[in-house]
Image 1 (cartoon, each protein chain N blue to C red):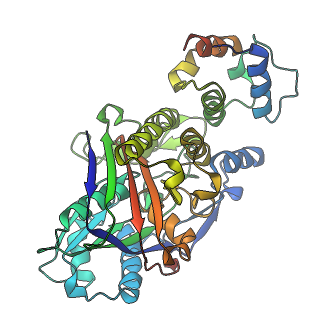
Image 2 (cartoon, rainbow over the protein chains, first blue to last red):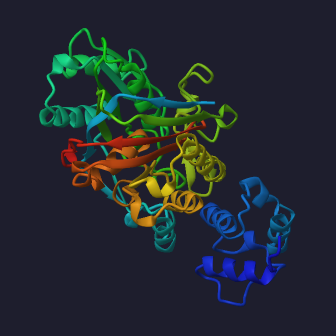
Image 3 (tube, rainbow over the protein chains, first blue to last red):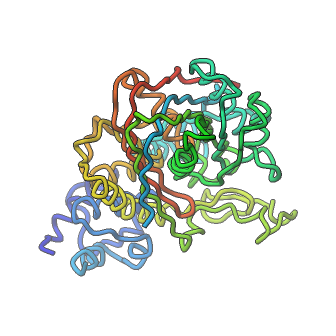
Length: 77
Length: 351
């Protein structure tokens, strides 16, 4: 799939209330962010589904350490 | 494949009842102010109605039925079938529907039984009842659907408590040779039975003192084994993949399009999930109805409650509705129902 990681990062930044634009990187361990929660996990799954038409499961997300891993999962579908 | 078309049955009336007592998620004490705001924004649930301790789900459905029968031009002895959909029955034995037959003053000729389904239960109930009405011996039927989910959730479980509200409902179906056919697509996947579960109290895990012990599962998630457990991520993945597919199959089978529908009434799970389903099937936001802002996830009553909240005036005209219920089981069911004039009294607030 032809997606840019910067596009994914920008979309994720918009969904975290406490994250300033330009703060997240491909290497950010999103699960270590203060705002991370099961609710935030749902929001990320919905975002990926809506924008990239890829249905990640909770297990998929648990396997991801950083944003690069989410990006890779989207690319491989 | 569980596609079913049922001719000659009309939806004649629908009523719903919620408890008077309201709780607000803005004051849910197990979350910080910021988390509450996020919860309300993401799930869409701002308020919930909570039944008194002495009230059962069947009390709410009973009140809805009383109101509906008053407005419908039906005699009680004419009701041939009573189906009660619930996962929170009055007793483990007997079926609540049979108690309701007597309480409602229906005839001994009326057949009555419960269906144990939750989120998909209303659409399943419609299918079962509609199929039974043959116009020969069985002409009129009532479908009651209600749950007191507040009984099943622990207030210290942030993953369930702020989502669920209590409600009951009643729907009247009648054999009518002139009615447009109702179309159904019904599915099940028992491999996901643990996604929404009350583990203890049945035979697999019999009730004991130990099962009543409230344990901390993770931060601000505490519950006993006889209380509802919900794996939100699994349910989300299930619903957002299976439901759009089922709706597309139903439309294909009936050679109809999304644009042919006047309203979409989905089970009220949570806003994020329902909106993703809506966007995937490309349903118009203006035609997609919600009651979860004020009532939360009301389990089997969510679809009729949403209809009563929004469609009272619209029900005076002909409407084509796409209904879809999905969740516990896992079980999912969608229907296309064309209505003519539907008796729809205002929401009953009781208790």
